[in-house]
Amino acid sequence: MLVLTRKKDESIIIGDNIELKILNIEGESVKVGIVAPSSIKIYRSEIYQSITEQNREVLSVSKDLLEIIKKKK
Amino acid sequence: MLIETKFFGSTEITENQIINFPEGILGFEEYNKFAMIPVDSESPFIILQSINEKQIGFVMAYPFLFNSQYEFDVSDLDKKELGIEKLEDVSVYSLVTLKEVFEESTMNLLSPIIINSKKNLGKQIVLNDQEKYPLRYLLSKGGV
Image (tube, rainbow over all chains, first blue to last red; front, side, top):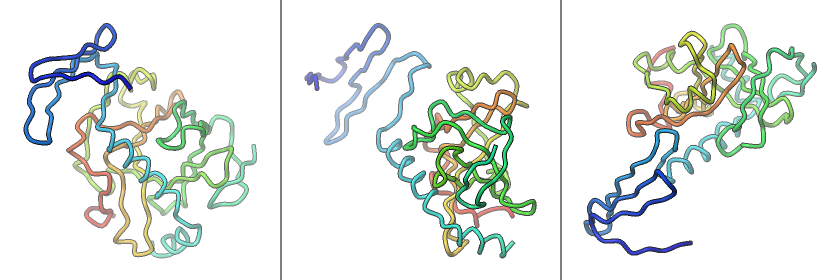
């Protein structure tokens, strides 16, 4: 991993068209501004993680449970 | 063709029923071909069944049945990837986590399944506004 130290209002350029700018630092929180083409997907990493976990949970439904729910309808 | 399904045993599907998910479903990227099989004609639930792996069968529903206010924009990139030209080409589904106590069942409104039914292309997208709709929306909150 490349590690760079930046101060407030400084930025990092990635490739030709992505810029990460440190907008503010307050306690343990860092506010980051991202300038990137709309074709670049940007997510908080924990969102990705939680969707993956939720998908796994969707699969855990048993055949029996679906039968029970069918009967209820 | 005959496929093995998680919920319905061996099931006959036609080639044109197969929907391609080039990126798979998040966390399950290795499964790219699915068929949609309704649970039954009365049920709001539909199974997104992998045609290659029996155990990979996701429960889905029309989100609008449970939340009539649900709406979002599809990003230009997602539109491009799915070859979406017109709104009518698009179907939206949400993955459902069924629970023994039905009232505790939830649906994922944050990352819906978008299908271009004209091109049989599908994708699980993540909404741009990640604060607006929850990952776990209680089914019992609205509808049906």
